[in-house]
Image (cartoon, rainbow, N blue to C red; front, side, top):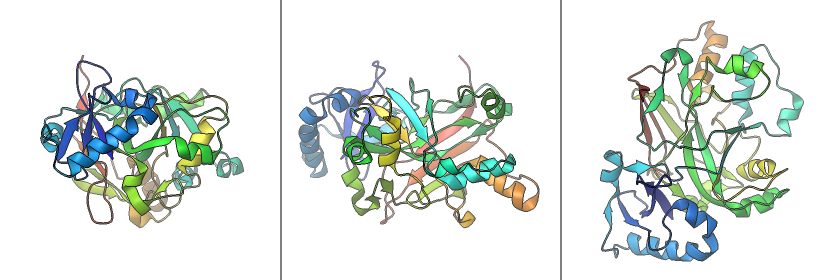
Length: 332
């Protein structure tokens, strides 16, 4: 089942059900007005949503509309326009290793057994066609492509097995970063705030069963294609090289608190040891260039640049739809 949200006067959007090829959709207001409502009443509405999804897939929904057109018109919001929490891990330690090596720092041994995670802003998730906005190019604007899990309620101290049962949906995230603001912020020893922009989510969030065998042991075993201005930045495999899976990351987030339905947990930037796969963020490309060539060649994003992030299944079909964003100067 694939779910999305249309922009509406309500800040949580309007829930719609989307068919597998992302061309048609139907409003779900008679079942659940918003995705947040559906997540909070999952046991009550899941079967009804699934029935409507199957009816749409079979071409039996009389009130279906053109989802592709709505997406092109910028009417599609993030599937979860506001998340209760955004908790971002760093499961791919090849990314961490490269970042720290460039700073002349080693990776502590504990990083291999205890996940890195920070809590970011979740009050306004960008839609898949919303622009990346910043006040200055000097901030070092960067994309970060990753997979995110949207949960139901998760009890404090949940095990990875319990966390697995709480993952309701999966989606893609562009975790926008402002690289030149991060070093001074981290030097304060209190985590990210200004170094991270608003995140964008893919057009749809999907139930794990939609991925079939590509969803295995808490990992999505598919490649994430990332492009800047139409040129390939990378297509690393999200199922390769992750030290921690999403079951472990959700359990880590719930170690000392309950997670409420509507929590979004990210894998962190997808990264593979094989540099031939390219990269899911510009910073990592620059770090490898710095080490191998003595100079970073790939520029950070500038106003007018475009970003595309998409994951295809093994038949070449888009799973979540694409995140396509243009970088713009912020104006009120």
